[in-house]
Amino acid sequence: MMIVLVTGGVRSGKSIFAQEYINKIGNEITYIATAIPFDEGMKYRIKKHRDSRPKEWKTIEMYKSFEKLESNTDFLSSDSILFECMTLMVSNLLLEENIENADYEKIDIIERKIFFEVEKIIEIIKKYNKNLIVVTNEVGMGIVPSYKLGNIFRDIAGRINQYLAKESDEVYITISGIPLKLKG
Image (spheres, rainbow, N blue to C red):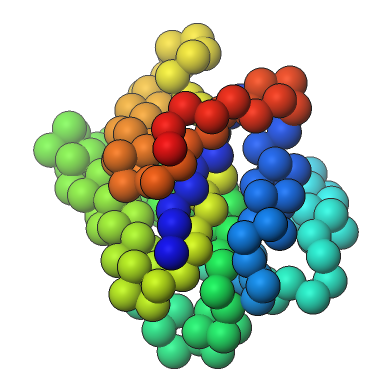
């Protein structure tokens, strides 16, 4: 069992690298997709991602309630899980909340709820002795957002990425399609 984190900017080659990597270590692969098809652009991106994956991979679409994996036959029958994308999961969970009107104590509670989901997926992966590759966006190298939701997202996603890097056996960053090993 190993946990691998793949981070990088948008369109940096994270997905391609993660797919190539999991093909090397996994026999029975399940892809956990966290995207929600909320508009035509996202529907198109989801279709492109589906088309890029091998047809024999199983797909589970979910971004929360990971305890349900313990009764999911696709998850249980796989030895390796590709989780894409952590930052989309964070976005989905944040958008379920009324962040714009929340005070910072409420934001701390929301962050704890998001961390609970991240910790749950790691706990389940370890319990069932699966390989896990997590794809996430590097959010700490860009412009500081000028709006509250953007700042909250960046801060929470950054802390989650730090947690995942600590929990991971290997960490990679992709830049212009080139993966660089940071840990492991």
